[in-house]
Each structure stands twice: as structure tokens, then as C-alpha cells.
Length: 420
Ligand code: AMP
Ligand code: MG
Image (cartoon, rainbow, N blue to C red; front, top):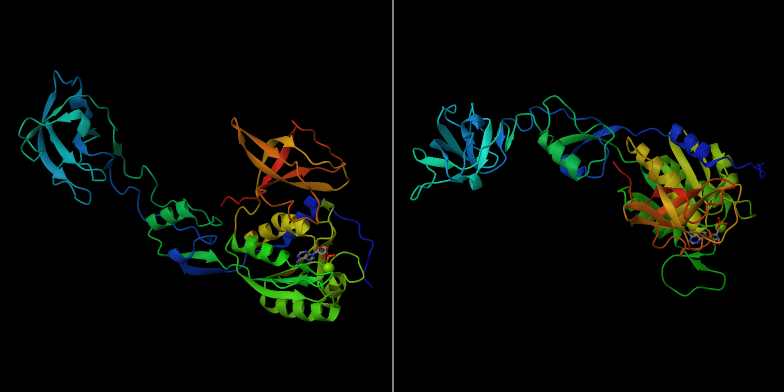
């Protein structure tokens, strides 16, 4: 017998139960160039300092800064050009007093040089072309360290600047490549299986019979998962029949780390999810959350696999996927930070709604205005509407019984993406 009267648990309690339960999958090695968007399992250590030598930050002349003291166009300091060092070259000798080395951006400084005078501050005598043996007139003094990047000034040998759990994006790719990592250890991506339930659902084109609607949750969830690189096995639509659901989800749990379904999770006569979970002998982490939209959200687990049963209402499944499913998948995928970014913001628009005992997540548009975050939730917040989340990039979290006024500071969840 399935318990029908269940007390919804607070949102944070439900999220904690789920994320405490979740574990990262195993590590595997992948070519760096095929690991974008994945989470690092081991942090590669830099085999050398970056840069590996003192180098010039500008084209110009490597000098001893002290020798340029007092230089001006009227009284230039005249130095003899000892040699020329291109990027990829190496100075033949240390810098001797009274000399300069013509140097290109990225080239190693000779020993004894502590600054680079940029070409703008160096004048060649008429007819000279800056070759070794000629002289250069320095017309402006420099100081030690100017236009010079010291060995290890960017990153230090032996350090691991990209930590385990970081998502490999452009900056991480640059640092990992700098560490010489052709292959990296990343966490295996969780396998997701997706099914929608509902006898009323039609996928794709074709005329609707009376009572039918088109399946929007399937494509919405596919887009949400694809947006973060999670691959999905799409099981299509399941009928509202316990037998079929038990069979399909039972099979899906053999292969998938996470099975996501929508619908059939409330307490209606056709809501077969609770019964199916019992039949599959899953451990229910929670059934019903004190959240609006999304109260029927139910999560059950077996070993290290989970079945997340999202409510069928489009806005409910949209919100609960952002708050529960994507963070879960990120954590399973090895993310160090799996939570969406949260900030505060000033409420500039609100829906016509009464306070409730549930925590509300208003679909909203957030942006910067005059240097501060403003957030507009002045739109329909109906769980049954797709239009409620079209064009939204944020949720406004409204605590139980709260009724924030326009102008008040509220908590903003940014759902445009997740920092690595
Ligand atoms: P349920 O949770 O199954 O009771 O569904 C709640 C509401 O969401 C009903 O109006 C369903 O028709 C609707 N719904 C369920 N699944 C989908 C779907 N995949 N796409 C669009 N609407 C859906
Ligand atoms: Mg249904």
C-alpha cells in the first residue's frame, strides 16, 4: 500500500538528502581536446615554471634599468646593441655594462637585464637598423621589472592551478595545455535515461485528437541536459500503466545512472509512479517537497542509481530540474561546485499571488541596472504554463509565507549556467 498522505519536506532538506546521497562516478582518461565540459578527476601538476624563463613583454631593448636613469630626447642614453634575440631564441651572453640587447616579445632576457625599453622609447641613429654592433638611443628612463615577466611569474612549477572538480572550459584548457596535459583524468559522465508519461501526450507534428496535448517536457529536458553536455537515452513516452512503467524503468535502471521521468507522480488515480517505485524496491529519498511549483517531486534510489520523478506540469519540471536534477548530474559528473550561482537582487516586478507555506521559485528575468542586479518576476507563475519560463534566466526564491514587495532585496538563482 502506498502512503498517499505525505508531508512535504522543505526544499533545502530535500536538496541536501539528494546531494548527500550522490557520488561522483569513476575517473577515466580522455584526450584534453575531447574533454571540454567535463570535470577534472585529478589536477595535473605544472612540470615547469610559467613562463619557463624571464621574458620580454614588448618588442624593444633589454637593458639594466639603472643605466637609463635621466634619459630624455635631449640627453639620450647611448647603448651598444650586443645581439638580437627573437622569440624562441636564446641570448648568447649576459648583458654587459653599456650595452642593450634587441629583443622581441616573448624572447628570453639575457642574464643581467632587468627591464625592456619598448621600441617607442628607443631611437636608432639615421641609417641604423638595430643590428648587433650599432647603437641605440634610449630617450626615456625605465625601472627594474618594466616589460619583463619573470620566470614563474604567471604560474609556479609543481603547482596544480586547475583543481580536481573544475569544469574544463577555455581557461582550464589553456592551463592544462600549459601543463603539457595531452590527456586528462576526468570523471565519467552519468548516463541519463529520460521518459515522459501521460496517455494524453503526442510527440511531434500531426493533428491532436480531442484531449491530447503535445509533449513539451521531453524536448525541454533534452535541451537542459544537452546544454551541459549530458547525453541522454530517450525512452520516449510511457503509458499511464504501472506494469509498463515498472518494466521500462526497471530496465532503464540497469544501464542508466539517473532515470528521469515526468508526470504520473501526484496522487491521481493514474499516477503510477509511487506504486512503481515500491514494486521496483527502491528506497524513496523523499516524496513531495514544500516547493511551488514542483511539490510532487519524488526521488528514489537503489545502490548508486536514482529515479527522479518530476511532476508533469511543464514549469514544475523546469524548475525542479534546475534545482535538483542538473546539480545532481553535475555532482555525479565530478563537479566541485554543482550548485547554480546565487546572488541577491532588487525585485522590480512581481506576480499577483498570495503568500504560501511553500517556498516559491518565481520565473524571472535578471540583469544589471546601474551596476546592481534587478530582477523582474512580473509574469504568470502558473505551473501549467510553458510561457512562464520562456525568456527567463533566473528564479526568485521566496521563502515560506514571505511576500516581498517591489523594491525589496530578494535571492536570485541564475539559471543561465553554472560556474566551474
Ligand atoms: P501529471 O503530473 O502527469 O499529473 O501531469 C500534470 C500536467 O502536466 C497535466 O496537465 C499533463 O497533461 C501535463 N504534462 C504531463 N507531461 C507533459 C509533457 N511531457 N509535456 C507537456 N505537458 C505535460
Ligand atoms: Mg499524467
